[in-house]
Image 1 (cartoon, rainbow, N blue to C red):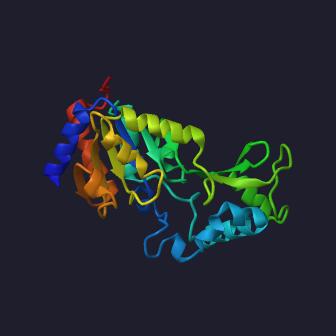
Image 2: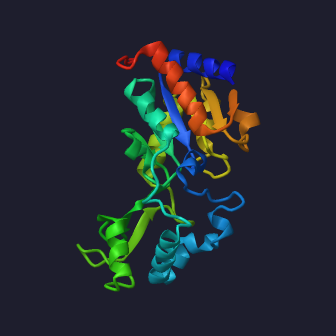
Length: 265
């Protein structure tokens, strides 16, 4: 692995526009289960519960399900803490090596670790959004009202509209700003870090494809416990293992090369 780490360091130091694409695998070490693996969320909950059609049929039922998943500990994002992989990406940004993180995750851990330029491709489950006026509210406040019996179907405090978790449900489009920013970044980057994602969900999986198809193509570095579904098509350097361990080694080598106060232009 040391040889692979050195290879990745060389690529990152020579690149001018490094972008990271992260998925559920970067957060499993923070105690957040992924969705599709054995024992993941979809083995416990019908994925259809997270469809926009079913939500609109009975918003209160969804909110009760969500609160039960949290209180049971089966899916509690609020109690999760960033792990070394999140902190390593934040440090890479502060060193000037990394331009931005595009994340498929909805857990807010990149921001809590200190990353500034974060594109939330699938939204954020720590916020609630009004479906009428688009006002945002911390989801903890909404859950507190449900748990105390104040509301069954939570409503916006501003306009009375129905509140929904600010994440993309099945049947909803990717937010236009996130989609556009991701497309721009995939065209600008000359190195793409793919971390903890199976690359099975589109349109997010289109990002490394677009990065490889442009001229000149970006160098795609994949860090996963298992090779992604697209590794044969897009991956130039495959590093298998724990995201936290690999990213810790990577940032240590980068800091050694750059010094903690260095900033690449």
